Image 1 (tube, rainbow, N blue to C red):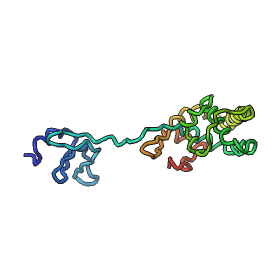
Image 2 (image 1 turned 60 degrees about the vertical axis):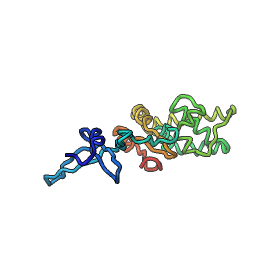
Image 3 (image 1 turned 45 degrees about the vertical axis):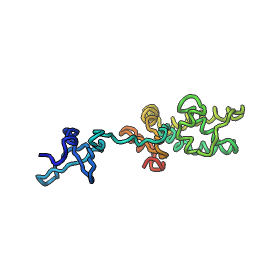
Image 4 (image 1 turned 180 degrees about the horizontal axis):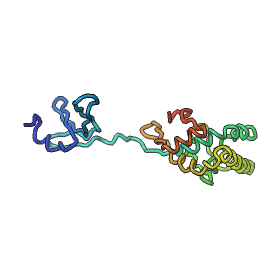
Length: 211
């Protein structure tokens, strides 16, 4: 006979267990694993399912997301920044006041074919160049710098990655930063993206978001 009341036990299904703390009851997912080298079995918790009350039944955990979720393109822009550091230096030398934004727009052009403020704000570039504001309008000289910077970045990326550039763009573009509850988290790097990273010297540990 169970030590728990019927109104508690009716919520206990296969693959779950109940934990009592004081006079409160909590339901968890679980599975069993054999302890290597012994005949013993241990229970492994797979997550919290909620609190059980007599009046309210099973009360699921509250959503812990308390801020808007922001998604930033990360992987491909990080690779471009890593490979084209010398181009950034050259652009800043040619355009001392606006070098960062000209370079940023050149990177956006390489990745998306176009540049605009929304793409900038949804990119890792807006975090990497966090003090760089997106202007309301560009001068003819700045637009010329963006066109030139885009060509230079395309050439540099083609030279560095060769025939791997096409798959790299596909796999790296899936790597994102997720802004959640005032923190940033990097998405998982796929095995193929990891393989390309090692082959071409893209060191994710240089980013404070992906170790």
